[in-house]
Image (cartoon, rainbow over all chains, first blue to last red):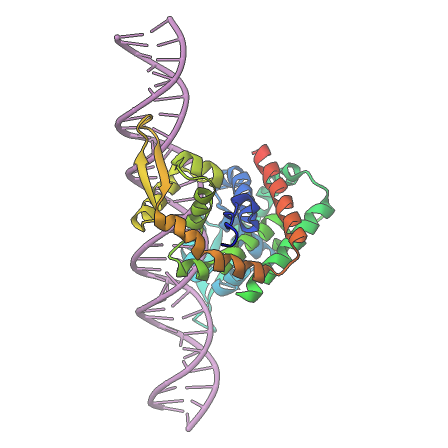
Length: 147
Length: 147
DNA sequence: TGACAATGAATCGTGCGCAATTAGATTGTG
DNA sequence: CACAATCTAATTGCGCACGATTCATTGTCA
């Protein structure tokens, strides 16, 4: 009767382009992070803590869109690696406060090479990268808003 | 001596914007896919097979950037769900050919609601979405090229 | 033809991601 | 003060990801 309904093409899907780009980033970061003994989500945790230290598990999770089911074991591994400490809050014993150690702070210097390598790999004018980042933020906000 | 080196801000990182957008997509897709008994990577496998059926595990993996370590158990679950068949190639017994079942083909109709819901959620002019998709493709290509 | 390299899938171990549940602490209310 | 509602982490179970290894099969070349 009506149209034969062409199959949705994988390469036409915006969601797949985002998926593939995330994958490509992970692949590009991996060797650098591996040399530092970090995984990508662990790197994101450090980025947050460098910006503001001494956060609860929940605060960290809000920024990264992760819950305690993911963060608790991840943070325990980072604690075992000597990057941070996990300590119950004295005032409110429901909270576990995450704080950087010296080693965790020092890691900020270690990732400068990584950041430089990525900037080199991207090799695009900054305004272009800024524009793309803002487009992605708006896209994510729209997706979340309707969720 | 020199500059105090401001900490890299999470929100300024393009990689995090991509990560967050991928997360937002997954979150938006989840309820629709769950109603169909699918996960997101399983949906990607279907998208590939609808476009061209009868592929080897390796061919599928090339399109989705996944290896047999990920695909083998995933495809076994999809086989158990009656969506596809896994069969050794008669000519070359190293290959396992993946073929859609009737149910797997029919699923193409089932996801029309999902696709419509997403188009509605995105709620942006098509040229804008096309542009963003092409930018992401170029970004991913650049990241892969230097890997 | 008989080594031997190359290929493709499966397997294993580790680390996310997430929903659902549990346990414990805190807060609000009568 | 009692007690229910709320809040926070931790735990559990399942499904990806991915590197590394193993195994069977195929291709190649002396």
